[in-house]
Image 1: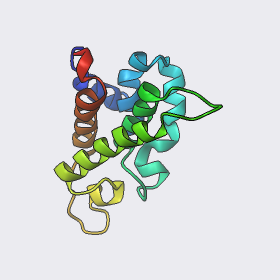
Image 2: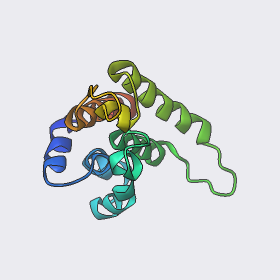
Image 3: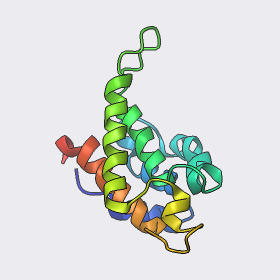
Image 4: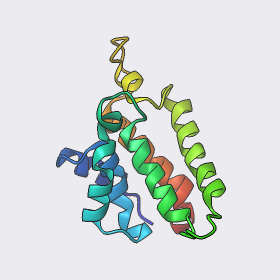
Length: 138
């Protein structure tokens, strides 16, 4: 798979939120059309709507983890643990690199010191998606 990190930035520059930028760049790899993924992730930008929550780029990455890994077995959910492991790996790797996974802290809302720009967060999340979720497809 050719890297799509630059595509995530192109989408963000077109007005997609951080979650949409990451999730839509890879949606075809998890069997979801772009319009559906765009709608699914619309409420996850800006730290889930108000900078209080997890970075949108990370929530987009975690949606991809579920779509990639879940068995979809609604009668006997059997893939949660392995999906949680993928999401945890993405989140922890991001936190180690950037010092936080919370939008408010990343943007320095309370401290006045930004840890990472939105574009930087998007690129970092996309890099983790490629390494953790799709490395075998490169």
